[in-house]
Amino acid sequence: MRRVVLSLGLCLALVAPAAGLAAAQPAPQTTVNAIEGEVMCPVCGTLLELADSPQARREKVFVAGLVAEGKSKSEVKDALVAQYGKEVLATPEASGFDLTAYLVPILAILIAAVALAYSVVRWRRGSGRDGQSAKGKPAQAPRGEDAERLEADLSRYDL
Amino acid sequence: MSTRSFLAVLAVLAVIGLLAFGLLNKGATKIAVGDPVPDKTLPTLPGPGEKSIADYRGDWVLVNLWASWCVPCRQEAPILEDFYKRNRDRHTTVVGINVQDNEDDALAFLREHPTGYPQLRSVGNERSKAFGSTGVPENFLVDPKGRLALIWRGPVDDEFLAAEVEPLIEGKQ
Image (cartoon, rainbow over all chains, first blue to last red; front, side, top):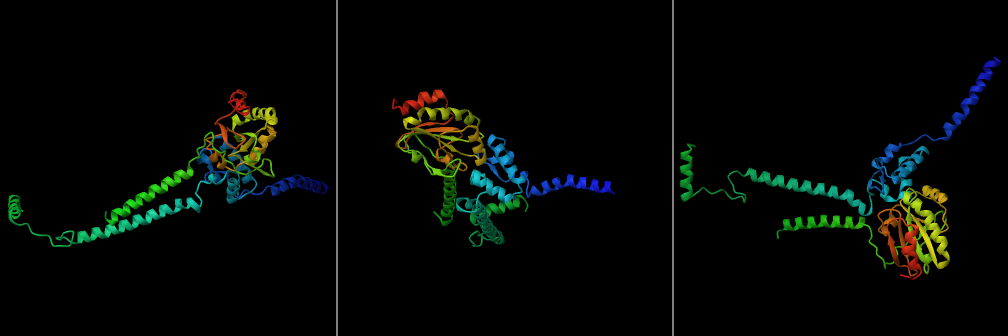
């Protein structure tokens, strides 16, 4: 019995520091890869995950350190902006001139949709008036020389 | 011109204007010898405190843009420190500006290469853009009136300092 108690005590003594260490290290809330795909290497002008310059390597170490500290993705991004400036973000900000990056495509799509709808309506109106000219007047039958030519062509081709 | 054509021309002009504005916003500033030095109050490295190049008005100032990850900056650091020690009694100083870096790495660099001259820190590319910089290191000699006397886009060495910078400070050029 004494031996069992001693063994248990020894096991506890071995496990306790490891458990304490695990408790001291917060669980990561994000991954280095998830961050590197969403931030830039400002010196290279490319995504951090694609960059391998000296500056990019230091930035990756900085990101890895923050991830290991248990910081969330937004906390890591905030820290990157504080150190490297706004250029480090791969997506433009939703304010100031950068807002145009979001607004211009939306406006372009709206304008294109309106133009397309207008064209379709016009085209359908035009095709719906068979036998009428584009301006809505009835098409005139050929007269004189034109009528004779039409008649000759029709009889030549037996139509 | 019909209303439709007018609107089309207006749309094209708006797109061109937007592109031009974007390009101008992104473009680096062009600076030249004789221009006032681009200046801004920046935090000192290490902190706390703030300084600007204007604080040294009346002295010659060799502004050095550097980053901890830049290998030529490491080679240049002791040369700049020697230059500072040789010239500090001649109304001349060096001001280091750390750019495109993170603060911990910059401080580690300064522990490895201690400097007697002041060091400032600029977040991101902001000061690099102001100096029209394309990389690091870059060096700018500012005269006692705050105007650029020399622009050198690269690392300096003893020969360059002796041949190009010191004669200006001594008034021989």
